[in-house]
Image 1 (cartoon, rainbow, N blue to C red):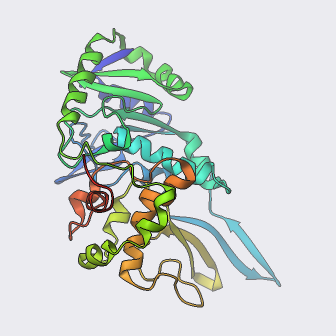
Image 2 (image 1 turned 90 degrees about the vertical axis):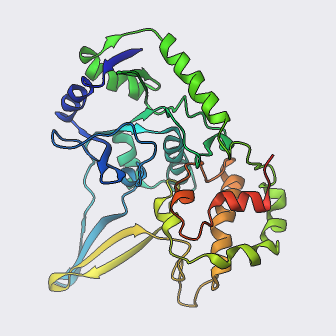
Image 3 (image 1 turned 120 degrees about the horizontal axis):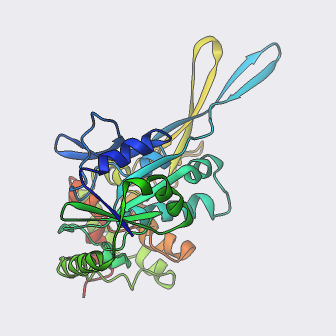
Length: 341
């Protein structure tokens, strides 16, 4: 295990920036957002949760796929995907580390491997940061996560005026070798004490005992046909904010537009199952009511995803709890259809 002073962390970022992009939570008014580090940016590792998530850097909100142009009797296609360069993301909390693992299952371990996602995923170093003061809207523990042991390629803890580093994977060990000369070796005793304190704080959170036991395949149709959906969905605005701030939402649409001289630009962008146009086809849409769209979102997070990957599609980050204007977050769904101990 290694450590460096909080002041010395600037030298770590600056050194890594010489050979790769370094991203970290940056203070942006009242919000934290992941952004590219530079000497002029304000890195904030004290905040609990960023508004955007590390997903944005691995699965961008919009990305070009290719350009196509008809010329001389044939269609010329030019790929817009370049080989990604190495980059590191610092300060990722346990919930967002798990969210990336959820995305990995979808994009790398399913029936189809997404080459674009795979190329970017192979180039990224995930540097996690243990939570120090989990918030009231955090419920990662309900999904079996440990906020004090965040995982990733390299795990870090902030204790007093030091940042402690511990490699978790071969890739993490590789990253640490690049900065070892800027760190000092230390023992794990201080970190173990910190872990215990954080774990005790988590136990005191209000949603730590959410009961997920009812959300399993054998109860799929019972939950799907439950009349409670008719009562609970009514306040939903269909705004889609829950999907755009969710670190595990993975749906995208593929669109194109016509550029100069008849050139067609093909790109993909995030989509939301809360919108009427989602999966719209020539014959129409299979989910025409807001109730059906609302039900689809939460059935997918809690039941369908679990049936396919043996884990839920939610990581308990609490962003939807903070941002849903109608306060129709996943905790209400869990309590309505599952319960709380």
